[in-house]
Length: 518
Image (cartoon, rainbow, N blue to C red; front, side, top):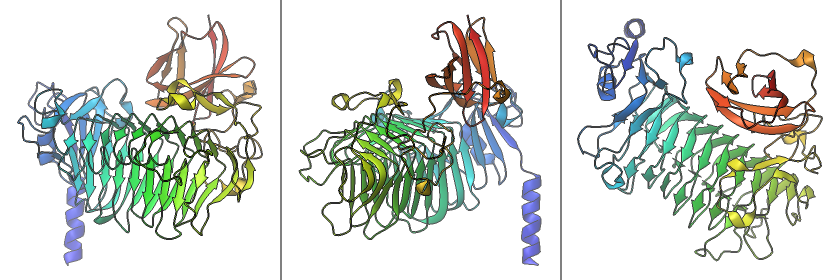
């Protein structure tokens, strides 16, 4: 009987679930039932939401409180998904343009521009049992300077799956995670994807995962830049399972620790990531397993990162440092990162257990490795070590056609289907080393041309996306040579291209368009 009542209750809740609208500039009845009558306050929408509802939030800035009480946060509700970046007339989530309609959750509640009186935690996700999605928000200016907690999104005591996607984290300061913290209690999976982390600072990482025996953290297709911290800069993880893939990690600074720190008995895999132009006191990646946990670095490009501080005198610290366990490094490029006087790139701290390194380019080699090349990888347009920290955006760490790293990997170590660009991870017969698969020439077979998502206007040189919000494109000239790669959000101007015929490929969609630039 109790089971029957529970089923009936869930059916009733789902049947009454609805979309709740929020728009700070709405002038109607403000009851949340439509865009015209949207709530103007996100807190009110959260208070009235029930299991199964979706909250759609239009572009604008929403603060946790109109007072100066720093302890007030937005608090998520069980089974209520949050979507931002609407213009205020959409009827479908897919109609959003995230680039042009930013929805901002701000912690700047006191004196504008003064972080000292900002909200401690902007969004709390706690005691969630069925999972939820947070999609399309800018989360900025939180300041958790109390010694605990996170100023951005704090997750604790949850079960199920939490999805965080299409978000932008900026100017947050925290002791335990400056943007996202995944705290100990609970048994849940957190998926962070397609998000940008810029200018966040603190102590224990932009993302912090604490002591938990059954939490899973998946980070995919994200960019981390501009973090300045005393401890770990980008990611400190000491939970159970980590999978970080297709991420760009650049222009971050750790004055006392690493860019990435993997501790405890974590099972961790970092793959298809570009780690370039960072500065640190210890290492770009530090593996600190207490046993011989399964820690894998696959198809990484780790280059021009600089050991730039004098706090640590431990000469074991190198670009990749592993202690008390066996880090497995496959199909990677570890090149021109400063550390000790002999410029060793990989070190296991003289422990009895050594690292396994295979099919990689490693500057100055690796004595116990297999198929190790000690050569210049021949990046297309790299920066240099002395310039670190720097942002890799204006440089190109893909491989030239003459690079010995092309087809030098081992397919047996490949566990992903795409490289960091979203292209097939194996382009020819054998995987390349590094984050990028070589894709520098294109066969111009007319039979390959198909397109539903790209539209070019020759009158104003604008290339537009039609059915998707964000994409990455590769631009080839008529000879098939790659001339540029860009991210497109809504539309992009191609006025800088010279007159001629170009082929533009939309990654992940296997679609191409031919344009004639006049």
